[in-house]
Length: 76
Image (tube, rainbow, N blue to C red):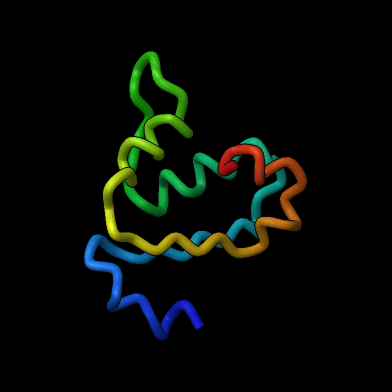
């Protein structure tokens, strides 16, 4: 379904497979790696991701998020 609309998002589309994660606290790191966003001194990774993606027309598909108990907290 997501593959059918990826061309509609001019700033990109990413799929992040969360199934391999053993630590739900690493969801933000997995997303950051997928969208090529790095850590910045003095800012949390979720904050950096939010700023990097704000105002962009992008699609972010998170696979297996429900299985990562606590992982949803990174993305309210």
